[in-house]
Image (cartoon, rainbow, N blue to C red; front, side):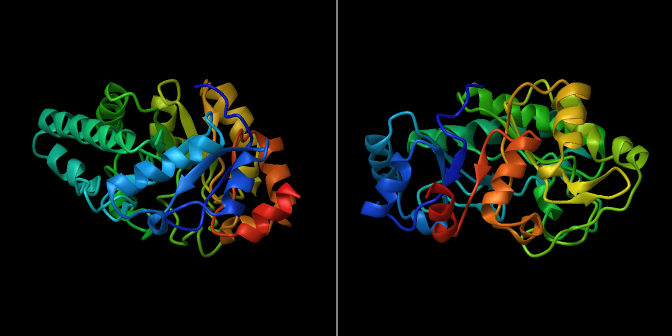
Length: 294
């Protein structure tokens, strides 16, 4: 996966670009942009918006969260995709049919997203549903590693068949903590051995097949005192050296509550990039974007 043309991923405010949006996107440190529901009306409008973005910067990479289920920014004029848990339920009855269905879903999602000028979705979810995380829950393919890995591989192959890169999240696993990192800093107090034997398994199995990884704003204090997205141990020692990952690392949104304890927005960007992130996301806070770009 090629590097972005700048280390920051930002967002825009509405359905069309403002003069300030164009100025932000033109900044040399901005290499990518993520779309949210507020940016979306019809497929034709999305295409016009992405065309306008590339008129500012042709090499800009454009992303969205189009996982399926409750995390699906594009709705009007797009296929309503099921929650990934539906494939896990099918797998328990007919594994091969479920893997084939996951492939078709991944391919369909990728075709529809690429058709409106968006390069990739932050998908798939590699988290396991341990039954405690509301923010993960039915976004996960399964509660057990081996079925999840089989389904994930099918979904990823579907995405790649339609020309879309695959971004796995939330490394090394967000499914075993109750807190939502959008609202708080979750703490997973299990040992390395417990994490390695469960949550880490999909990442370990698929690391060399993924084009990108997004780490979790979760701290695993028995392993490292820093949240995974700010941790050289997790991102360099484990992900790069032990698992052999060679793609891009995207921070999760640095304006989430799970990130704010690291310091100012500039501190968060600096620490994330130094820890091993290649792209730092700053979302839903234009004031913070302008602060970093100033």
